[in-house]
Image (cartoon, rainbow over all chains, first blue to last red; front, side):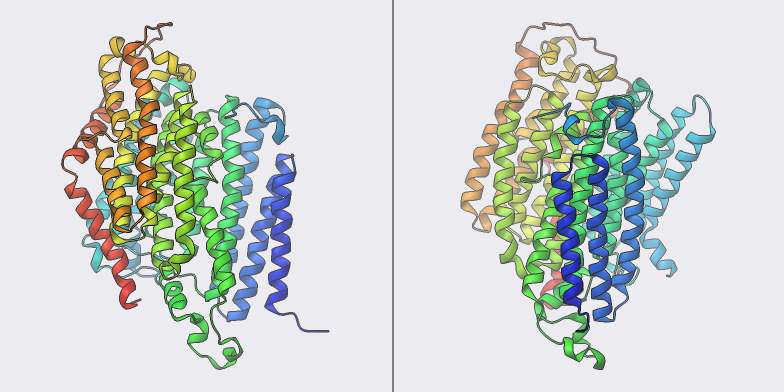
Length: 102
Length: 506
């Protein structure tokens, strides 16, 4: 079996990134969109850790921990906002959230 | 960590402490505590501004936290601007908070936290720090936008801002990760050196176990990274084609928060945008200048044309803010010292006139923001002459009429662009400001020349709001008549920002 090189990790993270972007653009449920964004954040983490081990430098891993913390904070704020909207509009479907247009 | 490091982030520490105090007061005190929150917030901002003054002269300070923070005149300029914006927003929202019965403690705490994040953004010299500052300020502003919890439009714009904002942050992060992969550094100065030497910073140290990695910086990775960084920052400054969120968010957010977003957040985003692109990526300018060129032109055209069609004043000002991002990008495209100074001057002038305009909109809006349509402004020139007069001043400044700050802002921008041989962009930019005059003047025409169809109630102006109006009007005129002091400061800051790059000093 060939060794796992940084390029492999790069492709894995690109795949995750692409899945996340497609999820944000095509899904209509706000929660799924939020999950897709989290997927992109984790693609970033894979990149950071892979590069960090390649360069034998600690700063990439440190950054990954910061990203995890920020992603958790974002998820908390995001779910709060979704609940606030649900109380007003009773929907989590992105197509029905259309009070303002052009 | 040393004491000297703590002194570097003293303004941020003061803001965070003030924010926590306000929040705790809001939680533990019962009634009538509302009046104390703005006072404490203002004290915190004053203390933070004092800390910035205490740090003077900024130039002699070494970078703090291992090069993560850079306290130069550039960051001091933006810190002062943010504190001024935040203080004016606190003063102008006192009416609004009472009227809409918003939770005063949390509101002011979030404003302070957002300001703190913006301060961190302005002084950070490391992609990690930039990300953290960006997140601190964005998370606070996502909540602030949805602060009218019972109103569907407010929650809706909060959700839109949140989803699109974190999507853009994710792009930015991916760009940062790729930049780290390409250069082995997250520090902006190190990235600059790595790109200049076309060699990884890590491999440049030539440690024995890393010898197989010695090689040039992968250009494909750098190019992709620049594109992703551009997406992230262009979203934050609401430049076309990443401006979709702006009108919806600005319309649905509480009006003082809209003022805060369109001035403070935009200035903070431009501060990091400038620092990343002018410090770290200056060497590969030919790769990104055309991105700025196209995006700047599209922002001006689309922002101005869409603003022509609006009937809601907040939405019109949102599109105008897209157009103003376009003007600023024109100066940025020049990527010269003069261009950076022009961007900084324009951000200051724009912040003062826009806060004034939104303060008037907020006051006229009345309970529940009922009167924000253009037709509600009919006849106000005679019923509320002073308010209408100040609105006229701010709108004229937004057009860029001489004697106002907006004129010199545009003048410096187009001068910088001409000196960088961007003739076409300058011509198109000037044409655009002519188009823009139409929709700003339309509001003035409504106020003075249309008979009122409906007599909207106009409340008495409270002292805090009056102070904001007088202050922003005075500052707008001051910048329009004696722009030299601010411009000198901006030029010095721009020179300092760029001077280290020529000789490659870390």
